[in-house]
Image (cartoon, rainbow, N blue to C red):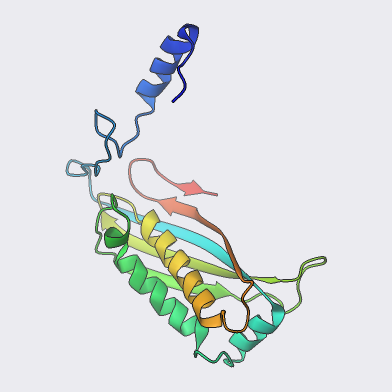
Length: 181
């Protein structure tokens, strides 16, 4: 890491004292956050992501003509299962007994926007729990795995699919309060 100029050291130290990374111990090593003293609160997170695919691929999904089967049904179940296993996939994520996970899809028009070759299939996940830590990672994992499942099931007919824009768009509960993107 580059050295901070001496005239900025005190400012840097003051900023870093206020903004401590929670997944690092005092020696700078990765560590799981201790949530033992935190209060249990109702928490909710909403995430989204997009799969960009050819209009013909979307048509095949909508008409259930994809050779591997019912794409959206399988992707929904894959996303829900992934959310339940998030603590096993993300090393410093707490394993949480999610109370509810839903995965839905917004099917766009079969016509791409002007100048675009592909259409954007939206994947949305909502996760809820009453716990000491949030469910953002579970919602994100549900979206990512559902999108990957769509890719896997459709790659035989559309090798150029793109997964993009996976992000938290809303969260509520906990000490940090609510967030809406």
